[in-house]
Length: 336
Image 1 (tube, rainbow, N blue to C red):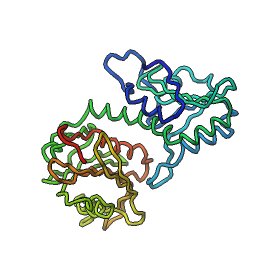
Image 2: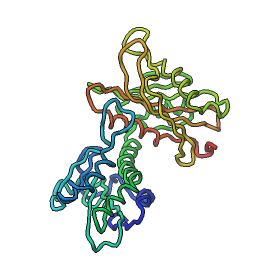
Image 3: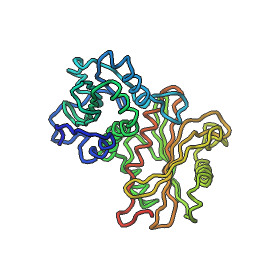
Image 4: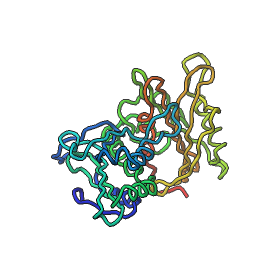
């Protein structure tokens, strides 16, 4: 399964096909470790395609700004090479997108391969009989193209978190909320209370953090955006700022974005926005995920935030996003 190409008419099938494929290292792997940084993407195509409508379409989709960051950052860092340059270390890159335009191709399609020359690796090939057909295909399937590449990065992160995690924080979350959570090593437990846990990962010039909290579920109104923001502010106030009396709160300069989605059958509510420090000058992006633990009839929220005034924030935000995929409720119950 790892070596053969999937010919796919609709790009959405790429995402579906990926679920059964391995995108991470195992102890029996014999291939080289893949090269490149997270969210870095090699695009192999001709100069004509890169400087024409095909290249414009690829940049519009893959280098689109990440929403809700303090400065403009692209979804992926794009590195373009000629197809003949796809050799050596370049061919061992973690993320590769190959473009093939040939009149003999019947219609635009896409395919995906995994771990071809290195592990973990994803190679997506998009093919079409003409530049115009490929441009149209990219536009029509932009969401799925981004999703399959983002999922490859997420799967790597989740696998690493699951293998090398902070057992102390996992134990604290289990004891407090009855929920398992694989948090990467490097995080430290900053505060633990009966209904609240705060952990953070401090870098020399940046900080990642998250807090988990729970409170009684009192009906569907509890999952409305206004109620979620109010709850967030109550618990975020327990995170102190740098000066006396200061604390974290949700910025009201830009209303957080709200959406609902299902993950493994469980309904989640997402808030994505910016946080501030009341009484001081700090802030950054946050993303929170809320569900109802029907076993205890309590609302459960995982809230991740980033402070990085000097460095780019995209990869830090992705890191706290990926924490959601390590949260495991008891198998015996699912949210309605």
